[in-house]
Amino acid sequence: MTAVLEGRDLSVRYGDLPVLRDVGFTVAPGEAVGIVGPNGAGKTTLLNVLAGAVRPTGGTVRFDGRDITRARPDQRARMGIGRAFQIPRPFGGMTVLENVVVAATHGAGLRGHAAHRRCADVLDECGLTTLANRRAESLGLLHRKRLELARCLATGPRVVLLDEIGGGLTDAEAAELVAAVRQVRSAGTAIVWIEHIVHVLVQVVDRLICMDTGRVIADGEPARVLGDAVVIDAYLGRTS
Image (tube, rainbow, N blue to C red; front, side, top):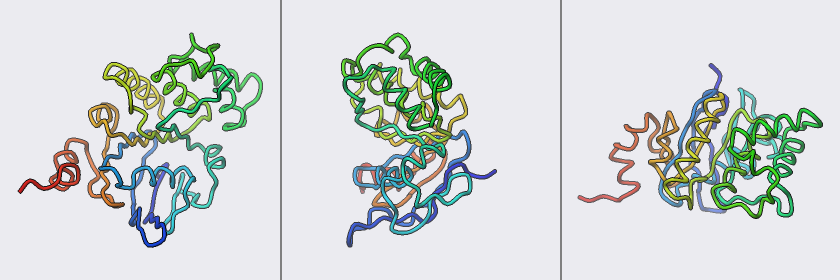
């Protein structure tokens, strides 16, 4: 089966500073992959490369077998790569529905009934239907994060890139967000999720990738990765 998303030997350097070092991985259609690692490991840079916000110094990004390394973020969105950011920044002065309509029209190129049908489905999926006419800036943090996810989904992605969307939430709120992400996953959308809250992440993902100093140091079933001595060293440091 062709990977829906693949990174091959991805490297990023800022001057003499290497941030990613020959990173390679694949994401299968419908698979949920978590990315963990200490601060400065290169996780967000990798997500930026996948989304098209950063062009790699070396290596390639492939989507459905096609080399998209030089594609812009808007082109990738139209192809089927969506992204939800760590800090939600909804369009102020607009309602929840209007925010999602912008994503459906400009991200997915939908118009008229098709756009509104997509938005209605996404609002329902993200638990925002009753808040559709609320001004986006009036929402609490959990619902702003739900809106961030909804705007991503309105573009009709086959792969969703999630950047620490659990940050700042209480345990109860994080549980609600997990339920929303699970629903996205159950619809067959592949997920790549960076998250520091590991107990949240492992409730959703099939696989964990651990990064450290710009490299992949472990890739596999979550329990095996989290029990790996190299991974424990990366998070906690050597104790002997």
